[in-house]
Image 1 (cartoon, rainbow, N blue to C red):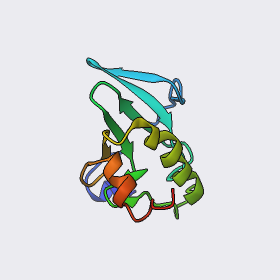
Image 2: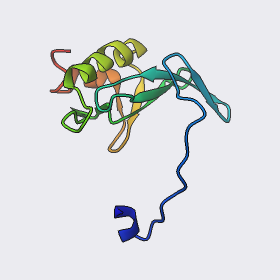
Image 3: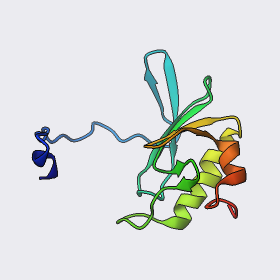
Length: 120
């Protein structure tokens, strides 16, 4: 196990009580996030959007100047581009997104400058 090499013990296995779906909402403290289904990087990928603050947590769907990998098992390039086009762009150019790693950016900036999205 790779984690053991770094002194990380494996957690107990668990089964989720339910899976989040498109249109669900999740409240954390005073914030309520919309759940949006965004497959492509992985088949069941979801993102979280908080409308009041105009922030989206997008995981590995979109990065500043790049997009998520689709060459891993279950990845699909066309699905990823469709997710960005259908789930992220409608949120608005003013939305700040926070990717799974790397710097945050604005959707409008990526729509105009991201070389992987010029045709989407």
